[in-house]
Length: 357
Ligand SMILES: O=C(O)CCC(=O)C(=O)O
Ligand SMILES: [Fe+2]
Image 1 (cartoon, rainbow, N blue to C red):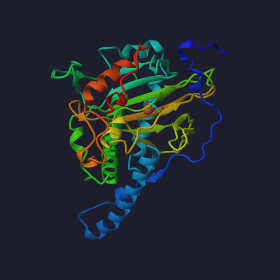
Image 2: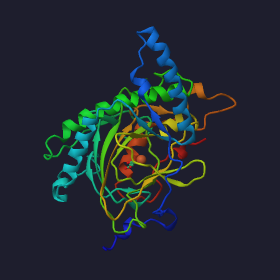
Image 3: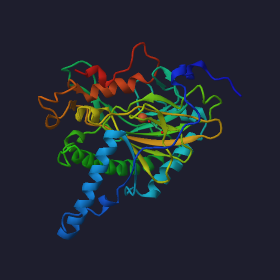
Image 4: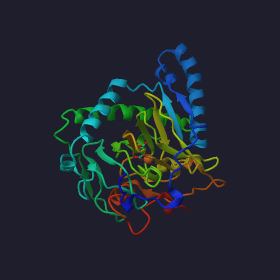
């Protein structure tokens, strides 16, 4: 059994229990009703509208109670998911030297990386990041009032040659699903289905391919340390190995998210927490590793346009429920977050609670 670099070792209170219960897991939601929804045919629309109403209620309940849920019958073609999963395995299967040819750094923020830290402890994983809009515009400066932007672009490896196409095809599917889910979430908050649409015109969403290698010390290290996702929504494809844990809101216990074939795991991010004025919370999660099996996952992070000022929505606040956050620039928040995970920091990386009133 190999020695583990101390950079990976979690403080005692953050080490995982290797035997965790899967009981009372996150809600499972069937999206079949979305496919049949048609407003052009009155008869279909009437029954479909009732089904959608049920779905909206289920999603609202899941967002409030868990911040996480699993969806099935989501309409994403299985071949597209299988294809990107295959390409990801091919990419990570190469030598480190090859992968480092597309390594990210402080200027090229998309690409391969194997030294990420979460809360200043190194994660037992390697990633490949792809921005969805080519190019993605983000602020050039972190100072208020400065409007200049820079462009983030992707780095594509020579091998596997089909990786780029697989990613582009898959992100289109993720976007479609994200818009549908945002529509349902908006309705669950009593808002029009398209309420969030305006925020994503120049979205800064990204896709991440992840490999968690087997680890000789899964009781000491984590594949990914506890964290919240910073954007609006995340859609995760995990393989059949398992390891994702969610901090259950009701009692603070870490609960393992059981892998379900073809399902996606959805969670609301910090932007949705602020928009909803804490009605829906972005819940902490982390990833355990194991001694035997490598694990692959593919999260898609649905993020607003860089110029979005994130703040509680007017419709959801009033004098009895005043805004709990000051407005903040999504673009600057995102640039700081993306830069902060490269290395150990002296201070806590930027978090929404820094904007809490
Ligand atoms: O790999 C997973 O299961 C979760 C990944 C995740 O939470 C993240 O990358 O933010
Ligand atoms: Fe996450």
